[in-house]
Image (tube, rainbow, N blue to C red; front, side, top):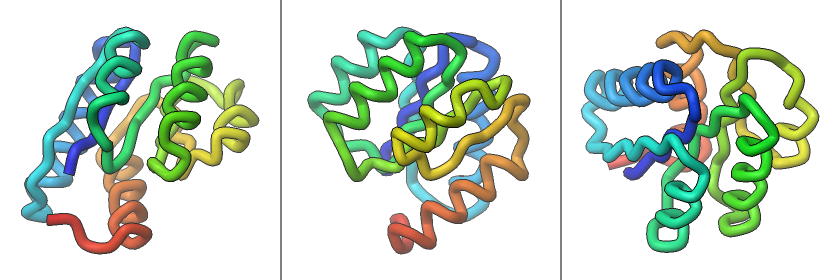
Length: 125
């Protein structure tokens, strides 16, 4: 499984990646977690790889634009929106995001959405 984490806020990006990694370790799931701080990085890589899920920080319109590019490239990839506020919740709905997480992130929020992903997609190996 390959999960992308895109967030312009370093601390938030690293927290999300760490919590995803902890979840995978506790469940015995092999996972690669790719972190991106810039829109052009994730967009460039998204052309080459198929991600199991993409966690996207929406802290500005650049994050919204990036989420739309990702969604257009892969209409079925589960998107998990992460934001400090509910200001972008309508965009999350339009993007058909699996989940809209309000920061700060914690293990309860991340584990809940990953458990939901597993139920939707079947067991990961």
